[in-house]
Length: 213
Image (cartoon, rainbow, N blue to C red; front, side, top):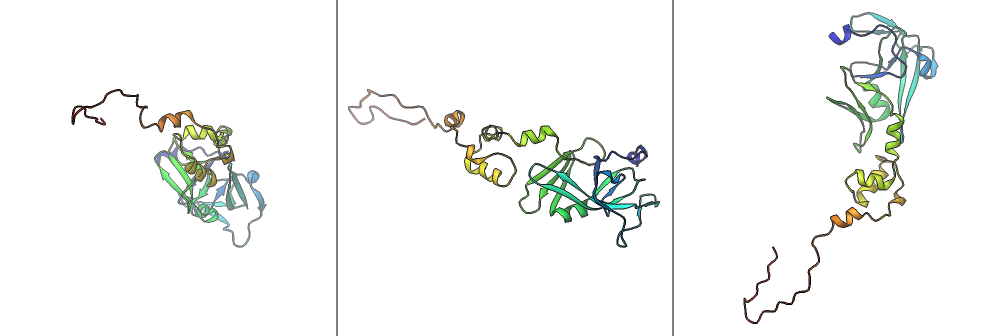
């Protein structure tokens, strides 16, 4: 209740969306960022019922796309209501339209592929709500790092495991570039130092005992 009481009544920025498990539809205040905007049809609700029972009129509908490095996430049938104070993403509609799942934790939310459980998007939260936003330029540059850099970042991951991440689009790089010889991996796979030549010779049984300590 405290969070809602302190909300500003000014329209939210077009790029600011929040995930809402209680919303029956996607909602936005400004239709300017939507594509395929049209007038409400007979199947579209004429108004939105908010928490205090008030009705907010629906003036149009449209769709919106979040662009990510390897795939896009879509919002279909977004309701436009100029009086709404937060742009809302309906969790139910989102998971159905994209065939993904959304997992919440104390630090934010993760969008995952429904079958492979691959993380498609990660949105951190530092406040009372769960914001949803596309990746920044720095995040995209991080994802598109060279294969050798990903190899070091992931704890010197082996070729087979690296190729699985590349094939599933978790990381963006060319698997054909992964042909370098990593010096750290060579040292890490050494099991022992070479043995020196020994001149010791035993004349009788148990004169000299060889032990592997």
